[in-house]
Length: 136
Length: 386
Image (cartoon, rainbow over all chains, first blue to last red; front, side, top):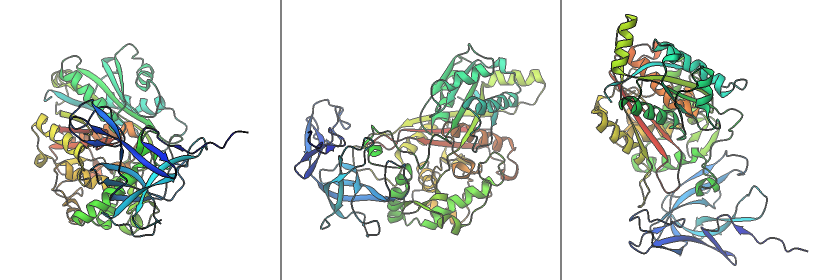
């Protein structure tokens, strides 16, 4: 008997699973302090190669979003995607968890949570999403 | 590059050609451009081919089909800017004096290869999470609406205008007018605001141009005893998307502004000199963002101006008289070359029912691909003058 495979992060370099929580993995530049997501090897601000991996905080504001009604078949529709500006000053592309008809507002506070992602192999894959604060 | 000319142009109608291969599709465009230049195929010294999804060596296959095997052939992939990037390579080669007669081809077959929208590569975080291209423009529309008051109706008017222009273009994939209500009532693809008729269709097609040195073109015209009224290729500027190291304002397309600024500096032709423009309207919102980023109006002004007919064929600055990508079609690699065909016909006064009144300077713009953390992958701005 083999154990059912534990859900794997869709991008191990960019996402860490810890119990039922997820954390975004980014990088911080040792030379200029710039944060980036996903992690970089060369700083896009100062081009330094002295970067260290770092967990990023999971809170920010919804910069903009869109509700996708038609997509290639590996992505069941509808789903919501958007950009979130993390409190560290990094913009992150993300799934957004909300009902499509719900009134999302640009600039609203959102926070990070795990989200299942369809994968071509059918193996359980975990990605991340942001949802409006106060929503579960 | 004032010594480089567009000597001949040709294209196939854009549409759905499931029964024709890439070479079958491209060959008529190549031969039409060579004939339009008043040349024989044997005079072509080098070829440049823009293509995205056709697999390896499409340019060599076309050159062999013309019996020209042996000449240098360069294939160029830069997503939607592939054809226009190939044109840039050709212009550099002619401008440098390496060659004086070269062929530039753009060719693409999308039917049977692509359906339900295009995504970035899987390696790209946005692609892995389902960022269909249409969503880029829905997200930017939300921001533009909030910042400038741009309305859904103004965005739909882009599609109405470009479909209306295409009625007069025999090479257009669609030649049918749509009302504002039909555009806004078409099936939602991505909300807010990007409906079926706000999206360029997928399509198959090919376009080609012959680029020559002005001096060689003058001699060839004299030898034929024909009048020499060249369309000068002033520049093809190319930019790549900058790393967004700050929280960028997505109502302004920096990659387009960068290519535009380079093109204006390189050519000495400014945005105020442009009489006609072919701008990469892969989605209705895309035309708004790009016309503004090219400095053809101030940010936020596109919407009010379209209500006054400013961008119509009879307006102050006609944009996409060909029908644009929205109606003429968007076979990716062919798009940038087809735009230059249109500008050439416009500058020569050969554009029939969609002719702009006496244009002297034309601009074409392509923007292709996405790279996570940047403002897009590739962007070109070409400027031609009479």
